[in-house]
Image (cartoon, rainbow, N blue to C red; front, side, top):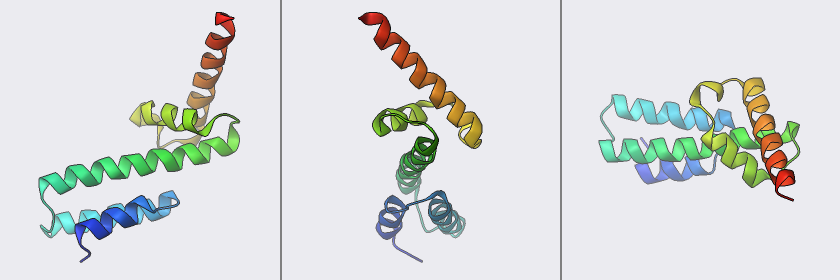
Length: 108
């Protein structure tokens, strides 16, 4: 079994959702065997969602033109129930970006 810090570092280096899910499966196996404590579960969960939001944002950014940081922020704040459906998430992000552009144009 990998040490907790090694698992966190590899999770942070995940480049796509498949690698991230593999790390999550490995962590789940470690939990079932009793290798990790509650503090480590919270830390892994925060790391997992940070990386997942980034990966999802990069996938959405392929379809939507916009600032990647804005897209990452919108994806991070999106409801969890739409994050599993790429089309729904893309529509959500696109709507939020259009709303932000509308607000910015309205100020001038």
